[in-house]
Length: 165
Ligand SMILES: [Zn+2]
Image 1 (cartoon, rainbow, N blue to C red):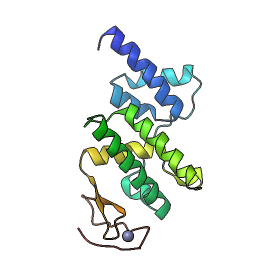
Image 2: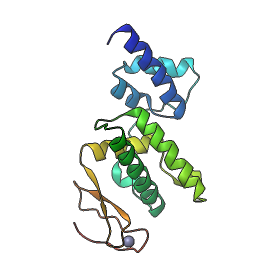
Image 3: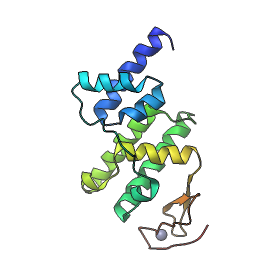
Image 4: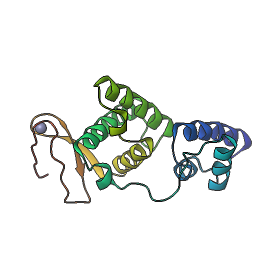
């Protein structure tokens, strides 16, 4: 990484930290050292850069609201990634997709607390890109999240249909 790249990534890292993305994720995706990202957070007085385990897929998809929120998030990211021809994890797209997702979510009149966080969105999109998760459709047409590595099945929030894949 040259100096200009490092400067660019540093500016992006600050933006991601401000949005609430964890330092460990930012470090992993930008290749900036974790210690450096944590120092940036301190300098910016950002306390949201928590450590500890990230939520796993099953806990993210633990309620019908979270499933709806996750489906929306993944659909938007998928659409943007196609439009931008971006097949690897792209934190800028992740932010854009999460912002759009939140706009729509609040537009529906749902509470902000019920939707998935940016860190949970990263877990979901990472799973989508590594094909641990796929998008399909229920017979009613509603978008379905398929968990490839698990027998755990998600019920359709619209018609409560549960089918095997
Ligand atoms: Zn359905």
